[in-house]
Length: 606
Figure (cartoon, rainbow, N blue to C red):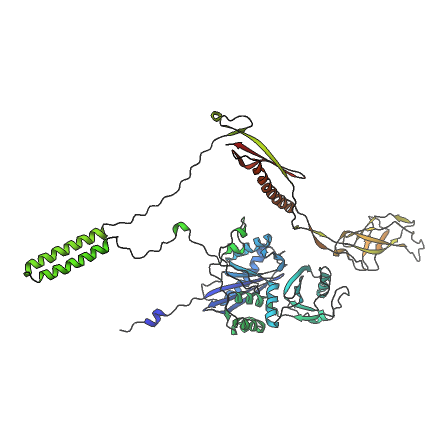
């Protein structure tokens, strides 16, 4: 009979399916890939545009759009197979200090719960694109990266492969104009990179950007070079970041079938294969560490063992391992040792048996058999005594805590044991200190727009308008007169009527770029029907920017830190005032905080 030995010992390989979900301003892209035997095969891709930006999209519409993209990507999967393990590609302004901001963390948790996704980690899309471009070009990239959508646009300043600054705005007039306006608000270095990389648009915007005249105030060394990336380059970048972090190789023909232009990704993945393999992401990756844990300090609950992640990879993922508690670890057991004298007894029995068998050679057969049987019985009883009558007893003792409370009064008088009164006295210490902390508060500020308007008066009498008089533009923006002005009366000639005119400078009531009105804007002054105003030149100077301010949380944190430091110093000083026959209480009885901390503590006699 022939046994299927080969099949029995053949190693069974199971496929795992992963999902990368790239979230941009106005579009989501889902890519499903299969991991088998250390190789990755791209299974499918799906895309769906949002009705508005991802931040403004209704929750129901957002979930529907993501579900459509994921379903399209999963359409080529085998029956009853879904991809739950998900790597998110998210926007740069969703992350702060390497962690997802709280408001966006809740959004991702809702997406994961509603669509039955298991978060494995996240990548910042712009960082993933920078990483893939670096692999393709062989050096860190310095450029202005523009994600262009129909209604919104994000500009990122990329210097030596690192994102220095990022801003998002609605599209005004046209897309190059919006990029120009956003760059003016950057805290730019002395020189901007003379290269603009466009991605995320169905249109070919290269010629539109090449034909645009950039503001002279922008520090370009020369007119910037314009480069357009393929539409799905960001999804390729996120996939590359995930796959390279997992130390896998890709079946290249699946890239051509999935992506319109897979050369960049294929080339980068081939380079990754030549390197030493990196540590693979564990299946036990926990969604808690990804951040989906409400009401807990994640930094205190990180897994004890975290795999080393190459610094060049933007993928954020960890291995979650749980240690066996000390009390229930399996003990290592070995062969049981013989009792202390068992070896000598067995040796003696062996010698005795030898003598018995030698003696039986001189005896008749029947008595010899009786003697042998007696000896065997003796050895059997000895074996039972040594081994069969032993037992191992394991005692488990569970600790039980008991507490007893007693009310004790500390008094300045003498000790009275019967009334639970203990003599003591107050000791005080005053400590000075200071502490500093980086502010975390943000406040929006900026400059007000200015310009000149011409006031027209068609009434038959002159009108005077004092400094500070408000005028309102046709789009309901308010400006005030910088000085008083008198406008002559209108002409009463019925054939050639003419309004009185006067020019005056005005300033916007609030800061912001929206007050930079174009020329030809009409204005009204109160409810006067015979008076109107218009600007011949566009207004300018209006800006918007965020500045750091001191938040209440900063004050509370600094106060807590300073209290702890001063308390420690005061405790050390107070301990020096206590004699050897006294005990200092472990807590302060009072704390006063004004310009100084005054700490009051109590001690009692032993």
